[in-house]
Length: 431
Ligand code: AMP
Ligand code: GLY
Image (cartoon, rainbow, N blue to C red; front, side, top):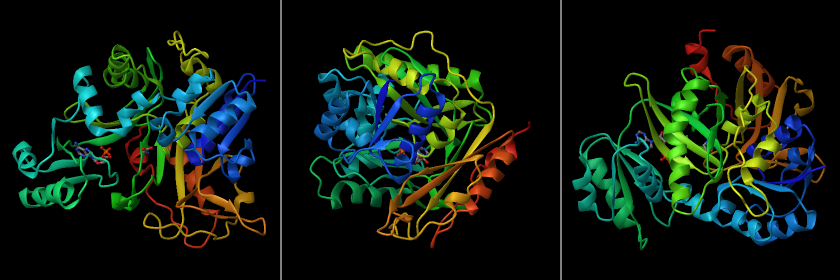
């Protein structure tokens, strides 16, 4: 029986564990580190943190796993895949050098330009005057690119707002190497298109949309994601292949050319403008999306273990293992609702008892994110995003209704659920 270790503790990793078990032709023995109470019901969990690179390598060696699948970006950027390759353990995820695509917005832009990927026009600046000179119209997008993460992205509507943001990002914050990417504002609709890459080629997964803001109608602060659905109206399989050829393959080629081949998931955050017929890349992530994965993987019918093992390459990391691979999908729609705790995203109320988990209909899949077990053995809230509920349906509206019905049956104090997940798909789908 093959052995696999999944690194991470969220809903994404729980969905990966479930898909590894569900789709395998030879069911693997699944381990997770550190996992969570939901993952512990499906896999053997080990108390090693997701950012403890030496600890994870030691665990993988001790368990003698055949494959490590890495969920979050932090261990990727910290070189977990490189360290595993040194001990000849295949790992699904990019090396630290390739993970810079997510780690640095300026590097990502440089690669996009070199690879000829369609993206918003931009300039990287380090002074307020250079920033103001780089602006060609409003609104304009200002992206912080420096050591202090979390300054994020500001869309400035006029000159006064742009200047104030640049002063804040470049002068008020005393970070030595602060830089700002000044970027053209793109109109349209956001789509997440992820591809599995083997260092040579990129195979797109089904498209998805996520909902980043806490409140209905995309209001309020950004979160880790309040829901998702897959596929996306207007992006059928043929269109996904076409887009992937324009946004994934050139990057895989460019990184191979530079001697830092990309293996793992290349996540393209896209702005699709249906009126102009254009697709442009907003950003790359170098891992599965959360919560997109919770909606995408339940639709995958191909063997995920075989897929990730082929992409990871052998112990000596020979590349190109995906030659001839084609993915198969359940045609149904999937909708994922996130249940968040009181106070999220500013804070996360812990210790609220979760009820109704045992009554979830078997047609819905519940994956755990921020849950914990209290001293009386009860499942309680333990983080901001607590649970994900995914349901499949023959139409977006069927999937949506089933997901909400199951989500409403899970109760805890302060529970937050966004009510408009997948409404867009329901409105546009003509089945
Ligand atoms: P990023 O971290 O680069 O993905 O940006 C965060 C969010 O800001 C995106 O998900 C978009 O909603 C928005 N955004 C980023 N870049 C642009 C752009 N060039 N035009 C319009 N919106 C953008
Ligand atoms: N859903 C957005 C992300 O995973 O970054």
